Image 1 (tube, rainbow, N blue to C red):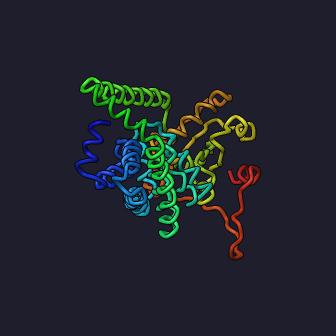
Image 2 (cartoon, rainbow, N blue to C red; image 1 turned 120 degrees about the vertical axis):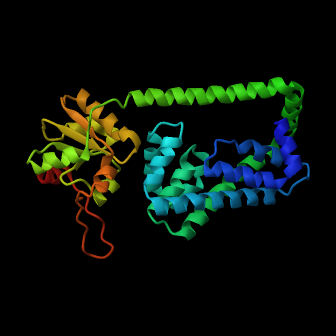
Image 3 (cartoon, helix red, strand yellow; image 1 turned 90 degrees about the horizontal axis):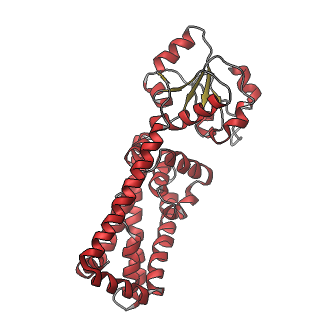
Length: 330
């Protein structure tokens, strides 16, 4: 904190802009401490609070437009890249995608309060071609709320912030060493958590070429799509049935019997597919494999997709395929 105060004294509000920009671009740096300290300094009359919040909002919108553009140009590949670079489990992308799919651009108003959601949400906005104006509006509101909370905390607890700075100054190098040790312990814990997660992903895979050959030969494995249902309704591997990955046990009771089950998703390391496959094994299926590379590998190989029928009337809602229709199709 003493070093942070020295940086703020040297670089002023330029540090606020740079710090928030780098954090929103994905660097593992803290931004809230900077906002709190600057908020405390604003209470002392050194900086206008409105200007601090405005700079934080500008930095956030600039960074989020970068993620928005990446999503628009690279599609879902940018989500896979995020999860591979992240220390968080691969489920982070799926959970964030589900939130944005359900609530749309208004979810950006709370995105910065949900760890790991902001960049994924703005990338999703680019993927689904959210209007830029809607993105900027809701993103700016969310950034203002987020930055405003930090500055307000610094303003309200300015005396406590001053005490912390004094204690940090007295602690000297030992205080810095403790902070670095705590950071190292956190990174080590997240790395261990990720290693444990990858151990859970040990399961036989089937390649897209093998699956295509099985279908061409007349074999009919039970192919399950465990992506969000909205993605399944847009396009799927021919004959694939959708199953809710969050309620596998309930959905498995309604699936047709099969000698072999192939599960696919659109996630790094086939994470969701593997987790569903393991639940199916516990439910009584004896041969279950995950599709290596998921639907992205299927598309890359040039194999065809099946599209759900859409009502012809303008503005009509998409028909949601029920289980009986899926069984007949399968």
